[in-house]
Length: 252
Image 1 (tube, one colour):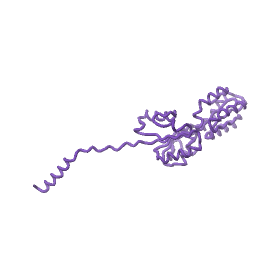
Image 2: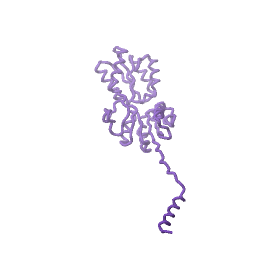
Image 3: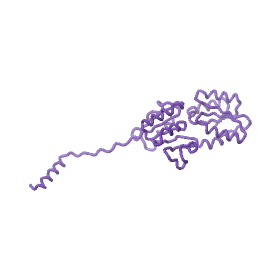
Image 4: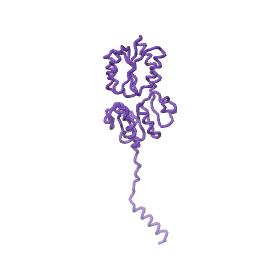
């Protein structure tokens, strides 16, 4: 047999003798979304059908866009339970887990900004992201932060103005606020000084102080209530509305 033909037959025999192997498709990456909440518990945020209404809405929106929980992404939620002193540790946990993106509200954003400049961050809502130093501009955020601006600073004065149109007079307007809403409160104070209106500032540290604040407002004979929140009071909106109605305080 010709040498070259022999070698060729060996190669052919070897090739035909090997069973057909299907190349495995590379596994699809399952992205991990770190979700932070300033209030509420982690247990209410876990899984594809969380009890937390805000997280549930986010997952429902992702589903409508064609992203399936467990197939395209999973979540790593952390709830702050309304305790700002816990925020840095919650952020640090997500950084250690090397999540692909972080979704966070305003009260936790300073801790996130301090902890990472590389993980993409989606802000669920912030009063003035430019002035507060999270983005370069609304059109071109730059850096690793993007998301929603509530434009609360710009609209606070207008909200106060509408409230005074509804309830005119010299009586003070009670301003119910949490600590993260300081920029909005400052905007309300500036608008009040310009127009000669009186404000009664009622700062809330936790949910247990809400009723005390309403008692202070009625004791001071406030004419109306302007509720400003940086996130800690969001879960208690229904309670605030009920107390405003019970106290006969027109509220915005």
